[in-house]
Image (cartoon, rainbow, N blue to C red; front, side, top):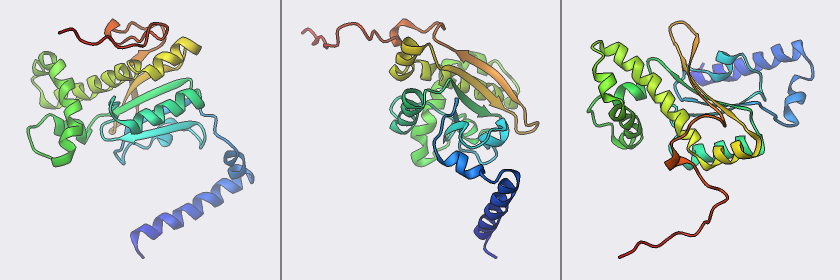
Length: 220
């Protein structure tokens, strides 16, 4: 039997299991979704968002990419974010990294990975900002773990710097942004960062939605 067919058989077993618990299980979830949480996680196959959090279908709005990044030029993550915030009005956004992240580990090297170099550049920028702290850590594994944590904290900041989040904070004082790190070896999640509408944000990133929108041309 081809390996992929095992997935189809597993799907049938899963459906039967859910129907035995509750006959209308799928009908309940098919009508609409009203999740309270958005999850921005790593694409790593060892980090299943719903399993880690024990959530059911309809409870977690998920976006995943390499190394759980929030990049301001990535229309994919921004589109998912805007839908989650403006349409679904989620109450919490969770950025979840994980120890042992291949994207973070590769970003710490000088190897050429082709196209993904441009994506890993965002993690290298985090390393550059915190290079003194990181290079003071003599143990390579501990330095790697610390960069995973710092990367999560920076993505929380990146979320707070978007006009999408700031407009929601002004309108409804939410959502709250959380930065978590998942430990592959233990299964536990650690909290590393949190921001809400009252959190301090560098003034250069704060939008003035009531001010003039015209752009002043440069003087010569």
